[in-house]
Length: 380
Image (cartoon, rainbow, N blue to C red):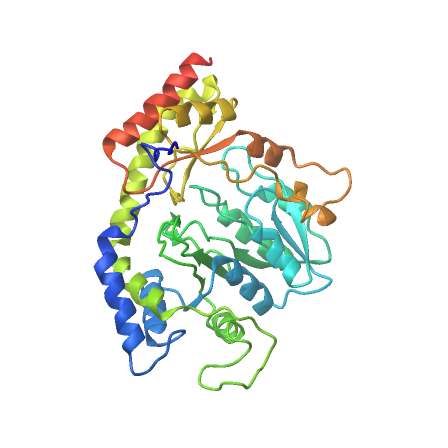
């Protein structure tokens, strides 16, 4: 019988919460034995929401069951529905399109910028029609979308602006935190995100208190707080767990240090990889503004060969999106016949994500960089 060895450099750390094990067990016991017996949307969730709200200087933060449901909640709160169109990136995670379809609206796919892999504002503007209700740019990997351009676009055409910032918690562009450029943004707390937790969860963040209140009502089957079984709208079951809320509140004090370590690693990678552009490996743009460091992704001409070389040396990598969204079977009905998204297709062929989590040692980071540089030199 053979057993596979764990990678020398894991893509995500297997012991992410090991140092906090005792605290997590204490929280489970505390919540489980609390006389209130309130396991969802209780005072601990409210406290966690307030921590985030104060840190962001937002009007409201609404914790919910996932980043995906957060998108659906905001779209519903904005009144998006059948007959509407929402412009979304052609390259990215499925909820970009599925959350729109879930409301009865139609996703309209815009191509991406070749350097950042985020939605191209110029192409998005060409897609605006009389039916367009909203535009939903998404931050991608370690780079925030060009939000100033999207703010201008939405204002010019009278569109709602929803910022898919699920991967970008902690990112800041021109002094504005990710999630607060649009009317609302979302975060995901799944364990692999920058502020991940041992479970599923997300949040809606907004500067619009009225929009936040509507999201808050919709996340609990259309009920307002304090009045159960009285339903004001058709909502969702998108509630937040009290154990996770308490644990996230505890861990949030360490978030800046974890984020800083990711940024340090990313800066080292970029310094090492920038000279490789003429050798088939392109790093993200070097400008540190608007960076979030969820994962660090390069574009490589020989992507599969590079991934295989790294794997041979014990470095785990990841290909996130092997197909653009309109090329996926689930979303093909929303792709106009004969239309192509060439830059999204190129990103799907070339992108490769490298380990960038805060638990990497300097030696591991140097090992990854040495391997990538060595590969590029050998494949000039």
